[in-house]
Image 1 (cartoon, rainbow, N blue to C red):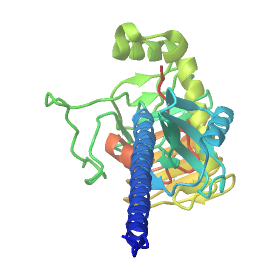
Image 2: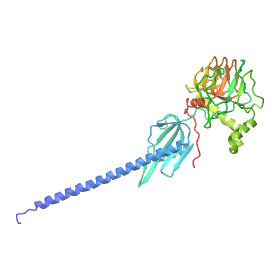
Image 3: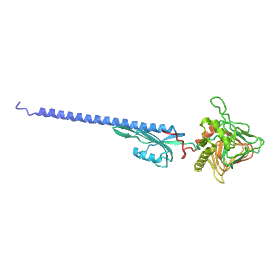
Image 4: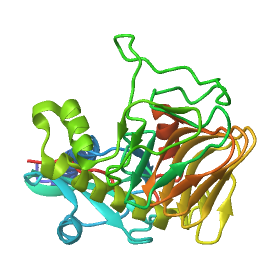
Length: 372
């Protein structure tokens, strides 16, 4: 025993110390891994909350979407920005928030337009906040579905488009977009779920307070509305007890249509996808499809042209010769259709719907539903 120097004790203590340090390191690593897993779970849940909020809000909007790259935006910054730019928001406590915003070009690195912007958060000890989700809303070019084949606001409407023996045809039967449309040929009708044809008024000119427009031969197939009281009867028949003069009467609807016409003219002059004619200009789309916007100019149709889509008029003229056709609808204010030949204007909800996607989303406005 006198020869022992205690080396074994030192070795054992050293090993115990090393084991203790290794154990502590492992515990710290485990705690870090646990925290990382918890943070990842919270971040994932927060991001899911953001996507859920964006989805819920978008369900209240009409249009198509495309995902935009997310940009770094703090929750407080988003809330502050949203509060200053709200046009429609959905919030659920502190877990998620989504707003429908009109963003300028480059606000967050995205193109100018309408967006659903959403962020999510989750509080689990600490608050985890998601990256923002940007969903671009591509809206209809014209935010009012024409109720008739030919609609015109104002007392300056003039519609005497044919001089041929068979005269013009203005048909309120809803028809498919495809198919021949010259002479007596018509695209096939559209049927409802009961197998019945679908009809809209052939003409709505509620400001005229006069007799129907005249034409030589041919004529109108469908209901004709030339006074505000006739329009009220039409809407009451369609809406029943839900009809309210303040929102559904001719004066109210006319204001909505005029606003949409002005918006369409503003967008069309800068769009390469729209057939446009300003004052003193003439556009001849031929047998194309899409949207024609006339702002004091002239739409020229000839031969056997078949334009498929939507024609929007702010003043101006439509001139024709031969047997051209418009399959879709015409809507505008104080315009004239004075032509020769035997033109036809055939209603087609399919053609209108297809046309709405042309140039859609260029700064347009989607309808916001009420959020409680």
